[in-house]
Image 1 (cartoon, helix red, strand yellow):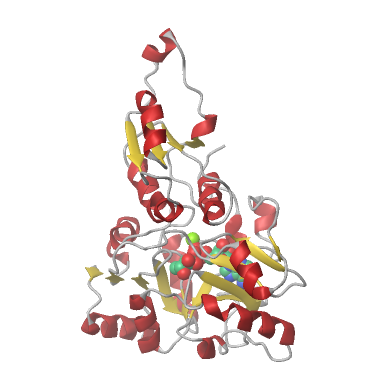
Image 2 (cartoon, helix red, strand yellow; image 1 turned 30 degrees about the vertical axis):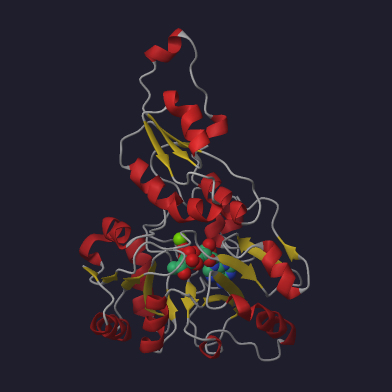
Length: 339
Ligand code: TXA
Ligand code: MG
């Protein structure tokens, strides 16, 4: 059931979490599927509901840096602590930190690893809920595993129906791309998943170089090692319809064009791209008139979900420069490709 985040509803959802139920809630990045991170059977339900491999660890959400100290154990880890302190300006916000795990966090949450991913979301509904519940909340994105993340309550309902009794509606997510995941546990700070907090922003506050793996499209074998972020594997965000970058789509020319029965959809990043490609596509969704990266990020997943329901033979997606927020956008587009 989708419910509005009134004071009463927030209390009800907090109580549901305290009693071991799984609920969905909005964050500024994407919707989360949350459960008490200290309750093994609640956490198990998350994996079951999503069809998520047990090898892919969960992000633990907390309301404050103080609460993070009950999730991550930084005793004797002065370098990690110093880095974390420098990153506090991004909390609450779309930044997840991979830290040494506290002994009270079960290995189910961390997929057997010794590190735990922690985040303080900035969405007011998420923050209020975390303050009320007073527990660390394990929450992956609220979508079926290997599918496109949910950026509205309706997306969550479409994936799970009433198997999640409570879905808090906080409107459309303003960022629309999952958080930047940063590993602080190795000699070099590394971005495991690009997001709205960019490499340049991280480097500016850390005062050190931040490493970005050359290709974040890892194969499944790499993805299952705990040295990297297991959720980074290929096809992680794929719709069912085959998807290609617009620049790679082959259009039949001349007389062959009329014979082509292929139904193609396009996700366009600007009016210019829409106009240029009008004749080749049956459906065009323009997610920004002006190639505005914030707009593209916010609308991309909804557009992918929408076109995926139209029985098309192909979805083509426009491109933007692979830097800053554009890096996170192109990362998600590349992962959604079927080739
Ligand atoms: O924006 C977000 O991060 C959303 C909202 C709900 O907070 N959550 C999210 O969770 O995207 P999920 O489970 O869909 O993605 C979490 C990513 C996965 O790629 C996972 O492998 C990685 O974080 N991760 C989690 N724990 C990790 C750890 N200990 N070490 C390395 N990577 C980890
Ligand atoms: Mg996910």
